[in-house]
Image (cartoon, rainbow, N blue to C red; front, side, top):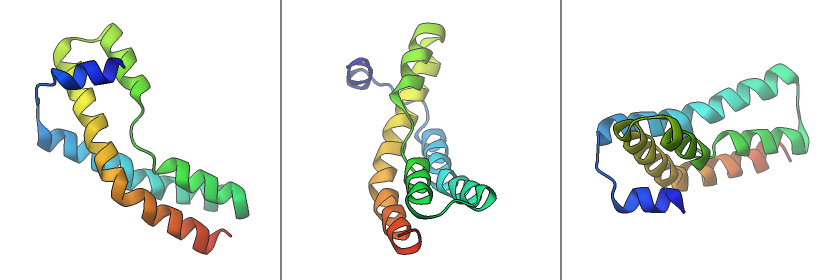
Length: 105
């Protein structure tokens, strides 16, 4: 609910900055997850879960902690990163789920 309130009065700090950070989160996350799968030698269900979880968008908890301890400009920046990573994840999650089902079934 706090994020919804913040979004209602969201002032765009920098969509470019938010888009870059959101893309890093939803693209680099699965790459790191895949690296962990190989490093830990996981397979099957555990590998699929790790890969899917690694592509999820930024968590709202970062916004809540930021709203308690940071200034308003930083909190607005965090909220815009959460929004952009969530929108980007609409495209990346189906791809990662497909790859998880194909390779880790």
